[in-house]
Amino acid sequence: MSSGHEVLAALAAAVREHRAVALVTVFPSEDGSRGAKLLVAEDPARPPTGTTGAAERDTMLAARARECLRAGRNERLNADGADVFVQSFAPPPVLHVIGAVHPAAEVCAAGRLAGFRVVVCDPRSPFATAERLPAADEIVREWPDAHLTSAGLGPRDAVAILTHDLKFDVPAIKVALAAGAGYVGAMGSRRTHERRVARLREEGVAEEQIARVASPIGLDLGARSPGEIAIAIVAEIVARRNRR
Image 1 (cartoon, rainbow, N blue to C red):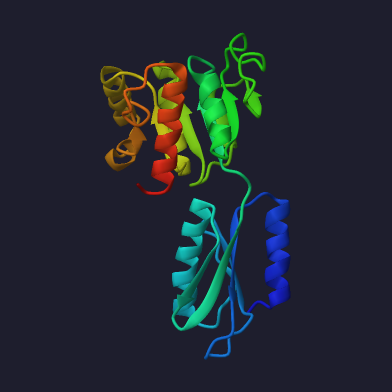
Image 2 (cartoon, one colour):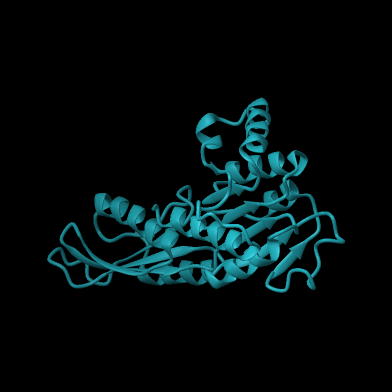
C-alpha cells in the first residue's frame, strides 16, 4: 500500500510532467479511512497510486475521477460510505487545428475562449503565420499525421480538421482516432466526407471509430460567417466533452 507521502510525490511528478491526474481524498468515515488518498491518472492503462482502503471503492472512484478530469472539475461525493473529495490537476486541453485556412483564425479565438491551448498545424508555411493566426498558442509546420503522432493526444484534447484535402485529412483522422482524442471533426461536404470514409475503410479503420468523426464539423447552427462557423465547431467540441 502506498503512503500518503508516496501519493503526493506521484502527484508532484505528474504536475511537473504536465500529465493529467485526479487526487481522491477521504474525509472522516466509519471505516477509519480518514485521510486516505488515491491518485488516478487520465490514462486507464496507468494503475492508480494509493488506496482509499477498499478495492471495489478504488475501482469506482478511479472511473469517477477520470470523468472529473475529462470535464475539468472538482467534486465531493459519497462513495460506499466514505465522504470523498476529487480534485483535478490537469494542463489545459489542447485544440489541434489542422489547416491554416478559412476560418482557422476564428476557431483559434473561440478555442482559447473555451479554455483550450490552441495549436495550428499546416505544412504550407505561407499560410501558417502568427499574423494570420494571432490567437494560436503555437504554429507547427509539418504534416498533420506526424504532428498528431508526437502530440500525446488524450481524451480531453480535440482535433479540428479544416483542410478539405484527403491527403491531409485521412492520415490525420486515422492518427487522432487511434490516439483516443476526445473529439475529431472534419470540415467539408457530405460528399467529401463519403470519400474520406471510403479511404479510412481502405486503411482498415473500424466502423465504430469512423463513426466518431464529426462531419460536417460543428453543431448545425446555420452558421455562415467565419465567426459563426468557429462558434459551431467549438460548441460541438464542448458538447461532446460534456456528453451532450
